[in-house]
Image (tube, rainbow, N blue to C red; front, side, top):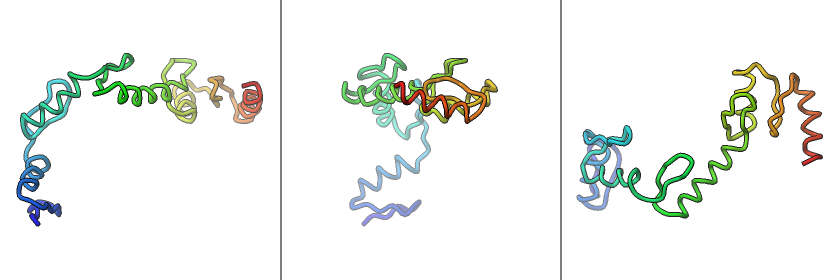
Length: 136
């Protein structure tokens, strides 16, 4: 076994240890021109830059994905995230609780139903939520 002198990692061969030292412990001096990522070598930067320059781009956020399947998996996150939209400023939240916290904190509104309606008290929201669930 080849033990890393800087941490507790161990490797079966010297090549793997060398890669580990380069990737984990060496100063990362190659900067990505697309984001804040820094790599230990130009070869690693080339692999990273492919994330920015190749693949299929999401039409909503322009992030790139290596395959249609990977893009479709990612786009399900957009669908989840876009469920709860603030009726005042149209900011999008992944959960009704996040929307509730935002609405109450930013707009002084009370309690929010998952349909987007706001109420001054939890009792009024509860009444509405029960009716909303029956209607939907």
